[in-house]
Length: 300
Image (cartoon, rainbow, N blue to C red; front, side, top):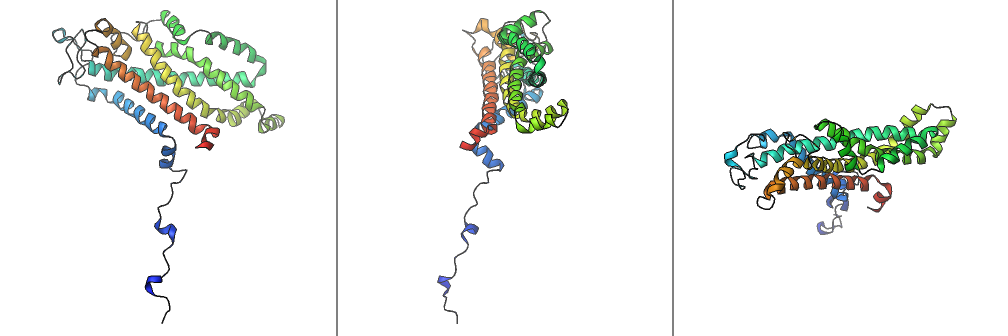
């Protein structure tokens, strides 16, 4: 007969009954450590969803004129009211998200690509570095909004021209960022070893330098996207951006500013959507900066 009674039987192994701790590499753990990425990412996804499905979420044609129903207050029929031409503000705001997101994403992509190429060449080829940077300094000395206005004054109003004008105003900052990274990477032992071994410069840039610029570029691209959306809204507000026939948040606010004191909802709703979108992109950028910075990651 065993001398061990049932009540003194060996206790079960503790790790088998205690909940396992969250793995640092899991998705839930990443979101827990970087909530700003989750919040900003969800808001950006929501705005993209609104932009893509605007034809199905809208209640009216955003360009349909109805003078008999102009300046209607928000109601069950017109959720955000109507403007001075009787157009449904709710539908126009939904379609306006398409313009802002298209301009923001396009400018972020174009400025990042152009700025990266210029920054890589300037940082790696010392002979033309000074010349390129003086040109970039000249462009950066002009405020982006003023440079965009000047460029739009030379062309006709269109979404494509707005993207080009804002991209020209933004890519010098990207080139400055990439150049600084390249200058620091050139002094690394593995890059010097590749140069000493006779590896061609394009191969060194592609394999050793460009991958190390992607993380800062992702963060910079989010801030460029947010800045581009504000610049586009400003250009449209003053009549130098997208054509008035295209619903955009800047155009809607510009058309409602004359009635701001008596019909504030015409300006209020597009301004709220623009603020939420810019806030979401900035939150996403702040979260990516904290997550991709090794010094900050060690503190979390």
